[in-house]
Structure formats: structure tokens, C-alpha cells
Length: 168
Length: 152
Image (cartoon, rainbow over all chains, first blue to last red; front, top):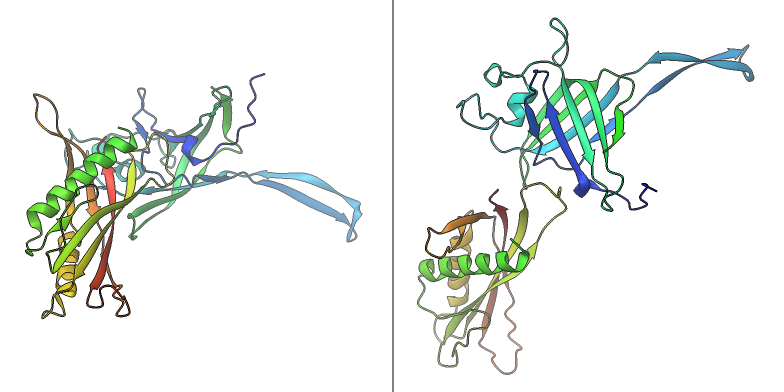
């Protein structure tokens, strides 16, 4: 039985961001805070019968995209934008800095999007999982100072009703 | 590198830095090192009290929180502020200081394994005038937290 009853936590996770190139630019977010959060919404239309729920019915509403957010500690904001030999940095990938050569995962003319892959390793080693968010676009990018470390907070949406979850 | 090895290197780094920079002419007692103090009117004790790894991703570069404590003692018969002088000097040595943590490599160049950054020190006066055995003893404590960033 490849099912584990051991709970998982932020220590077991790994967040990877990929662009839409044929050979994708791949960045493992090494200094994320372990606070990745996503919400899958389901819209429902409630049709009441002259105000009565017991006599009414429901219908499926429109599909909703996934809201997703995470926070990472801020080291330098730019790497490749300053020197091509430097490693890619989170900020310049999330903002599609031209110097990075990052390509959107959506077709030309659409909003620029990325793929986020969140891997949660099973501490027991039997049922690790990968959660893939397609077509993730940025809504806000909040950069802030802090006593412990400055932070980059990403909030956006994945243009799909649910992520793809698979066992690895 | 496991915690015990890292703690050894970190302690060595801090002790070497202290020995090179602390210029007040009083002896320093390091833990585990016998230091005759009976003849001295003042002395300091330097401790690396705590090494703590906060919750973090398993694959993230490790960050450790460090606590250094310096106890400053004085029973100087004339200088009633020598304890404060020692504490102030000790605090200024660590205030916003960045130190490389280096490991010796046999037959090779020393290798930097981490960078430790110290934050703002705190000074407390623990002098107790009711101390029966040494009523003139001043005891001030400098506590300084730091963050050690391990090299990838």
C-alpha cells in the first residue's frame, strides 16, 4: 500500500518555477518561507423557489481560476539582468525581465504566465506528490523590508480550475 | 556539515575575532579553558550559548540563529564604571558585525563555510550589592543574536 499516514509540513516541500521555453528555464525557489497557499473555488448558482431553499435547486456556476501566493526571502533582485553569467533570480523571472530570456507559457498576445511545480516529499518515502499549476500570472508582487530578512510576496492566479496532482 | 562541527567552527571564529579585537586589558575566560582570575580586578567570559535552526525547507541553504553572551565582571576598587566600560566595548565589537566562518583544509586553502551576521546587542546589569561574598562585584551581561548563513 503506497499510502503514508505521516503528516507533511513545509520542510518536505519544494517550489520550482518554469517558463514556457522548449527547454524551460527552471528555478528552484530556495529561500521561500514555506507558506505556499492556493485556493480552488467552486461557483454555484442557487435557484430558490419563491424564496424557498427546500423547494429550490442549484446549478453549476462558471469555472474559477485558482488563487495562489507564496513568500520568499529577498537576496539580490537581479542576476542575469546585471550580468549574463550570473544565476537567474526570482524577481527577474517573476517580472519577465527581458535579460532573462524567459518565455511565457501562454501563447503570444495572452498575459505572461509561468508554471509552478510544488513537490511534497513523503517523509516515509512512499507517496510523494507533485502539484502543478499551469498558466500562473502575477496579480501583485509585494517587496518589503523585515527584521529577519526582506521579503518578496507573490500573489497571482493559475488559469485553470484545479492543479494537476500526481504521485511521483 | 553537522551541527557539532559547525558549532566548533563558529565558536572558533568568534573566539579568534574576540581575541584579536577586544582591546581592553583584562583577561578573557573561554568555556573549558582554565583561566586564573583570582588576582584580577576585572575579567570577561565569552560564551556561544545557543545555535538554533528555525523551521525551513529541507533543501534550502541552512540558516542558523546564534546567541553569544559576554559576562563582564569588575571588582575594581576605584573605577566603579569598569563593568559598563567592558560591556560597552564588547557590545560595539559585535554590533552589526559580519564574520566569515572558515574551515581549515589540510594542505589546502581555508574554505569559507558560512557567514555570520550579528544584530543589535543587549546589555543588562546583573550587579547585586547584597552579594555577601563579593559586595563590590559588578556583573554586566551582553547578549547578541546573530544569523549564520551556510554557504551552498
